[in-house]
Image (cartoon, helix red, strand yellow):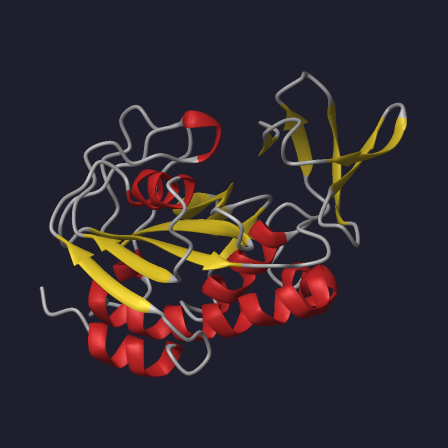
Length: 251
């Protein structure tokens, strides 16, 4: 595939000196590789694109299917120093969704949805890179073509349903430079600048939801820290992404 590595570098390097772009035909997981580097003390900013991942990962250890041409999978490692990390996955989701298509919505805390089907996902990890700032490793997977639904808990969607000629290189060039700018804004001011933007694409708001701990309730947007607000029988509960997973309740 013809990846726009130079165009991406030209757009990002002035914002993040030392930035590099790597394109690999195959790797176990782009996030895993960048976390290995960070733990080894390598804190340079880098975009790692994998045409195929043999052990792609999602949140809570779930697998992520990745096939050349049918998906876009990449990870971005950046030394970030926000005063508060809360809401980072929501800010990333906002940035990517806004630059994909108006129909893309956000399912808290880290999924891109079309209707009630999953178009993509976000996995954020952090590691200390020697004496420098903490390294954020932001992994993003987007279905260009919808994969088979068998074995998936949420039916999949593909971007070509919305953009007929979409391909991985084109989508990467569209989403990556704005994402870096938004990450700089997040590092400067936190989730506050993304709150209203998230609300505009919130796929769960005012819907019945079921939490993985058995609690049921109605989603009521997110708080200033990005926590999901759920009206339950016991009152309003703020749910942190590390606590539970959330799904729309079955009718």
